[in-house]
Amino acid sequence: MRYKELYELGCLKLKAADISDYKTDSRLLLEAVMNTSVNDLFVRPDMEVSEESERKYNEYLMLRSKHTPLQHITGKQEFMGLEFKVSPDVLVPRQDTENLVEEVLKDLHDGMSVLDMCTGSGCILLSLLHYSNDCTGVGADISEKALNIAKENAKNLSIESATFIKSDLFENVSGKFDILVSNPPYIRTCEIENLMPEVRDHDPFIALNGHESGVYFYEKIIDRAGEFLKRGSLVAFEIGNDEGSEVKSLMENAGYKNVEIIKDYGGKDRIVKGYFAKD
Image (cartoon, rainbow, N blue to C red; front, side, top):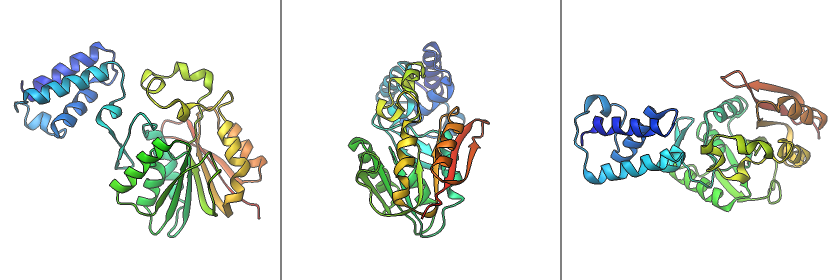
C-alpha cells in the first residue's frame, strides 16, 4: 500500500474510534513506524510501504483505537523542544507544564541548584538544566520505575548534572537548594474517574491522586521545604486550575513572600510561586 493511502486508512479507523485528533495521531503513528517526517506525506505520498510496516502500523492503530496514549505507543514525547522517553510508569509530559519550566527559568541563574519534587520522567528538571549553565539538580520520586525513566532521559540528553533519588517527598533529600519546583499529584481522588480515558486508564494512579482535597502534597511539601532552601529561594508549583487561591494561602501562611498565581496560555491558573523568607 502507498504511504498516503495508509495514512488515510488510519484516519478512518481512528475517527471511527472517536479519537478527537485522529488526523494528527494517524500521521504521527505512521511516522513512528516509517521513521519519516510530516513532509513525507506531501512530498512522497506514493511511497510504497512494506507489508511489515503496514502490519506494525495497524497494530499501533488498534492500540490507539482503545485510547492507549499516543506517547505510550511511540514511547516518546516532545517537551520544551526536547525528546523524552515515556512509559506507563510516568505521566506524559504536557504542554501546560512548559509554563512552569518557563517561569522557573526566569529565576534560574548560572551555578544554581534545583530540587524537583515528584520528578516523574525528569522532564522539568532536565529541561531546566539543559537551558541553563553550570546548574545542578536533584529529582526525587517515590517510584523506582519512574526514576529509571528519568535516568534514561538524562543519559539520552547527555545531562550529567542531574541526580535522581528514591524518596517519599523529603525522606532521602539532603542539602540546600536555590530553587524547589514541583508538579505533584493534584487531582482529587473523586475526580479521577471523570478524566479522559487516556489519562484515567493509562497514567499511573499514584502520579494523579492528590487525595480528597487535591492539595495534600502541596501541604506536605510546603510544611518541610524550608529545611532544604536557602533564604530567598524560589518555590514554584504547577497546580490544578481551581487550586490557586488555596495553594497561595498555604505558602503565605508559611511565611513565603511575593506569592503569586500565574495563568497558562489558555488563561487558567496554572502556577503558584513565591520566595522563602525565613532564616
